[in-house]
Image 1 (cartoon, rainbow, N blue to C red):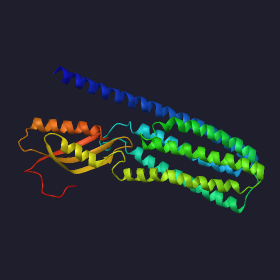
Image 2 (image 1 turned 180 degrees about the vertical axis):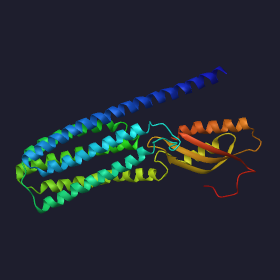
Image 3 (image 1 turned 60 degrees about the horizontal axis):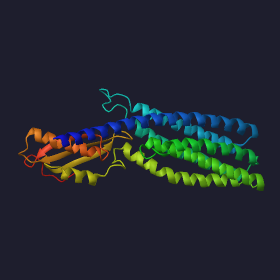
Image 4 (image 1 turned 90 degrees about the vertical axis):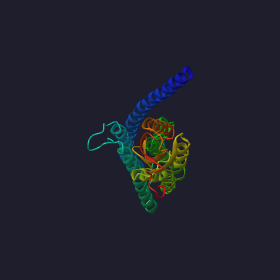
Length: 314
C-alpha cells in the first residue's frame, strides 16, 4: 500500500513539474517574441534609412521582407495570447484553433515574400543597377547578427509548436538573405558585377521554399483536422488494446485543437460483465496513457460486444 502511495505521489510530482515547465516555456517564448519583434523593427528602420540614402533597391526590398516577418512574429505572439482565451457558449474550445490558422498564414506570408524577392531579382537581372557594395555588406552583416540572435531564442523549442517553428524559419530566412547580401555586396565591391545580387537572391528563395514547404503542408493539414505529426495512430491502438478490460477500440478520430493540444474521440468495447465503476477505471487508465502519446482531450463512448454495431472499423 505504501509503495502504491509513493508511486502515485511521484507520478503527481512529475505532472506538477511538467505543468511548471510548460508555464516557464510559455513565459520564455513570449519574451523571445517581444525581443525578436523589437530587434527586427530596429533593423528594418536601419535598412530603410540607409537604403533610401544610398538608393539601394536590394536593401529596401529586404527591409520590406523583414517588415512582413515582423508582422508574422506579431501574429504568432497573438496566437499564444488567443490560446489562453476562455471557452464560451459559441466557442467551446476558446480560440485555440487560431494558433493553427495563424501558423498557416505565416507560411503563406513567407512564400509571398519570397515571391516578391524573386520578382525583384528577375527585374534586376534585366536592369542591373550600380550599388555601393561595401555599404550593403555592412548593413546586411548587422542583419545576420540580429536575426541570428533572434532565431537562437527559438531554436530549442522550435519542434514544440508550429508557430515557434514558423518564427524560427522566418528569422533564419532573414539571416540567410542577409548572408547572401553580404556576399553579394562584397563581390560587387571587388568585381563590379552587379548581376551577382539578383543571382544570390534567387538561390536563397529556392532554399527558403524547400524549408517552408513542410510548415505550409503541416499547418494546412491541421487546419482541416488532419492527424498531427506528433501523434501515431498505430501506437494509440496498441496502447488501447493492451489496456486491461478493454477489448477493442474503433471509430478513432484525432485532430489538433491548437498547435500544442490534440483531441481524440473513439468507441471502446468492454466486456458486458463490467460494472460502471470498472468501466470508469478502464477509461481513466486509457486517458492517462494517451496523455503520454500527445493526446490532451479524450472523449470515449463505451460499448459491449452485444451493443457494438457490426460495421467496419473507422
